[in-house]
Length: 171
Image 1 (cartoon, rainbow, N blue to C red):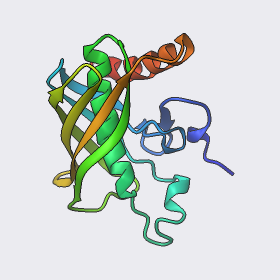
Image 2 (image 1 turned 90 degrees about the vertical axis):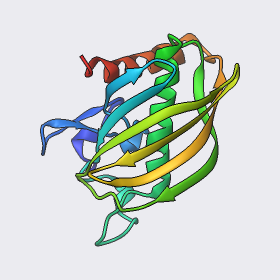
Image 3 (image 1 turned 30 degrees about the vertical axis):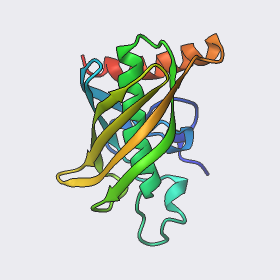
Image 4 (image 1 turned 60 degrees about the horizontal axis):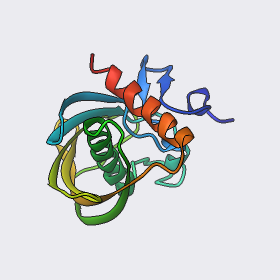
């Protein structure tokens, strides 16, 4: 049976640690915006859930968060930075990972901090770089986000609710 905290959308409460946990099954890896300097940088945090289906095969008996999800966490923080800075003018899509380096493992239950900054900004894309850390840096990357109009109001409103919900935790 699927763990109750993974049902529905958005961020879910983790019954074990009474905190918000990243919702891997719904592809929301940011729990909270901790700090933001519009158009410059953002700091976000995430609590890796104790149980998620991704850990079943990665790896049996030694669960670690896949590197691609570490990069996606940083990329989502970059998307949050753009959308909060631009008042949701466009949607940000990960289109290119220029480089990524992994310095450690992320295990279930770990608390992560993503520190992301915009390196270059243009009309239709951003180049971002960032680090993902626990006590030490476990990953660093540089990537490109394509900026595209929201396809419809339903999508725009859903993204706004999600991002603003994480940003409200800053206050």
